[in-house]
Image 1 (cartoon, helix red, strand yellow):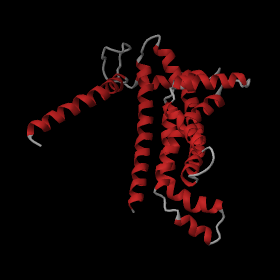
Image 2 (spheres, one colour):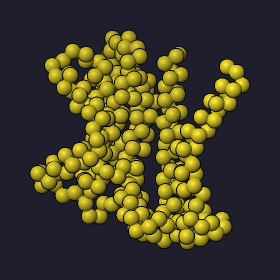
Image 3 (tube, one colour):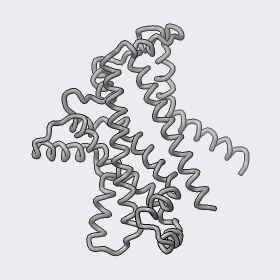
Image 4 (cartoon, helix red, strand yellow):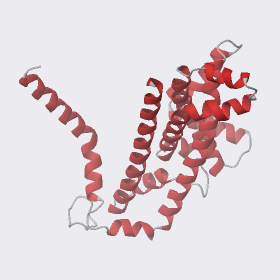
Length: 264
């Protein structure tokens, strides 16, 4: 590759990453703006981060979002892991094609359709919307992502280890918890973090399935942004970016560890 080609590639990469991340950088920078005007820089200040601590609505919404993300990620991880086990270990059973489609459908289903269908389900069953309806909705659309991550690990799993444990007298539960689960743990953790992240910033599905007293942080931010962007909104969005970044990095590290385990 000559110098001109490298220069073109570097320019294309710079423009591409700039297009993707420059708006986020601007948001983070203006979260430290001392001025109340969003587009006018008034000096460096952390006053808006302190102001978040006095905003009870934002804090309640952040706590609700964290609870929904954690519980839904746990549910999605458990169901997604067992779904991946079923798809990997039982290659021939009646209804496998339908089961596979049901597991992976949320990956490609538009969120508006998922949210609306869940809303109709809850209404028809007479279930009051609130924390648990949002949690179930988020678990529904994230379990497919967990199944994909865990299944990728199970495909290369050496089943002879389980057979050896079973021959030594271990029950199916002991085989799973003492042999299978420790080996696939990095993929399970990566799936959990992915589900947690997806739930953390979901707006569309939560808007359909939430109820009074269960407003998530993305919904609160969206409702306030419609009245105008404030530096306080920039600060809470920056904190969300930090949380998502940490979760993505942790998931990437877990996936990398899983890849290294496969090579060994």
